[in-house]
Length: 126
Image 1 (cartoon, rainbow, N blue to C red):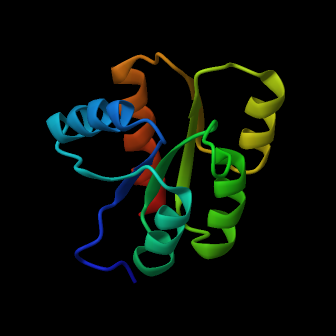
Image 2: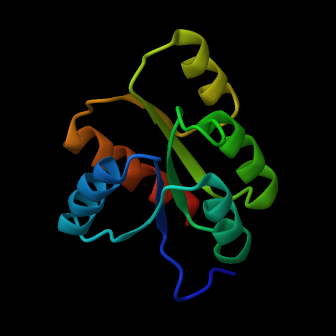
């Protein structure tokens, strides 16, 4: 059962400017998001709130996005994960998708494509 005060979309990136831009994008599309710069803080939130969708950056200093994806699968199996990165590495892409990621994006990404992927992930999460 989803907590009624929980955000259905969570954004995780160690770069606050990326989070700010993504937050504005999703807010303009009537999909407000909770933002996190710290993977551990996000995973603690996910344990309690079970977000429907998590948009996770691959390259972060504390923990990679693939590690977050793996832990999130155990914490909140119903959460759909969309991975994004600044460096397109085919091995990272295949690892993320094989581990169940709903989508994989390379920055900079097309806003409409990202919004569509999040909408599809939200639809499959409900």
